[in-house]
Image (cartoon, rainbow, N blue to C red; front, side):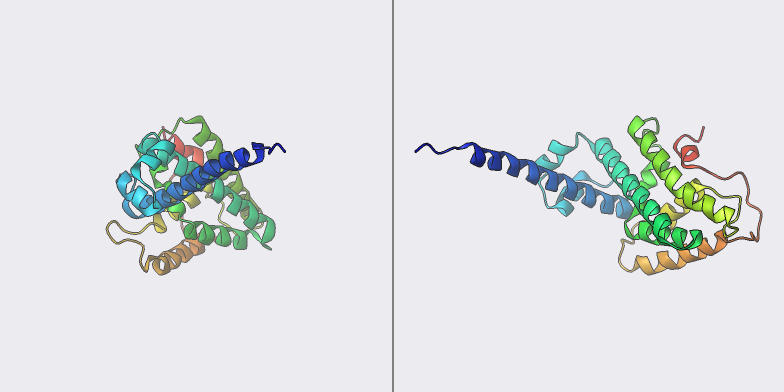
Length: 217
């Protein structure tokens, strides 16, 4: 009787691909945490250590630091977009949706997007531009509904929310993340209260979109 070796071969072929996908996900997750805590200049050796992989494995997936930061940024923006869409679809009003999005995004370390606001990032990257627009639309939809219902002040846009969210949910340099979440939640709640209508102050400048942040010129 002839034994068909094809199924076993397919299993062996599938296992390395699955292992590679898991390693890639672990590296991106570790890099996100490390960028939040240490900034975009975190040593790649530290990222590999946190991910539980060797340096060679990291470099098989990502050519250099810029490539890794790019992938982390795209992953964080995609996840934040889904959080905003789900919050808008499931919450009873726009302010509840905005609050849910802000706190969930902070919990998911959306402050890893800080490199997007700095000079280390290629703001002209087409994939980043596309994902930025998706996130801008998702958060903008929450804000637009809140402004239409009179819950949110009229002089804000998605960029204002994202800048405050990324900055307020990021630990101070050198402090790590231990115990920081309770402070971040307090400060984010203060920020959210400041977005309620009627506005109690006049803001300098104009409302910022995420596109404005991507290309401030």
